Image (cartoon, rainbow, N blue to C red; front, side, top):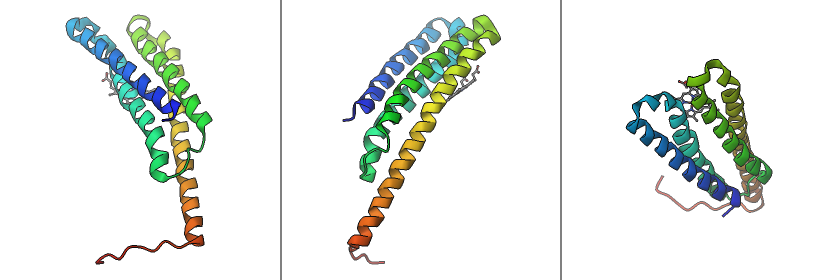
Length: 151
Ligand code: HEM
């Protein structure tokens, strides 16, 4: 398994623990519901989306039968996603206390996370295109014989 896929899955599980813990804290101490955006993003961008990134980096290139377009992008993505989310969540937690002064923190975190996500889409797109190109070349060299079906 690629180490960057493992790193995303580990990060996802850690964000899950953090998101659950903040949710539990909000249930025990309802005044902390002001931290709801931090809770939502730890669970959705941290747990759910990072799990999808990790499983996606491992499985999608294998489904398409072609190595990933850029391992460098994938490694950069780990840092962009985790540092970005930490800043976004930090900004959301500061916001009820310092108001608009938290905007540069959320904006920076959101930008880093978004750059990583755009890179993921680009990386997967290039991988799929390369797989399709190779499949077409192989087919020209040795046309695949389709199994007969009733239609
Ligand atoms: C770069 C990525 C993202 C940025 C910068 C961002 C930013 C924001 C902001 C500024 C809000 C309003 C928070 C408030 O009410 O004070 C919000 C709300 C929300 N976002 Fe995101 N978001 C991002 C990605 C996502 C993703 C990927 C998901 C889901 C998978 C998501 C789910 C939500 C939900 C559910 C809310 C409502 C939270 C609530 O009601 O408290 N966001 N987001």
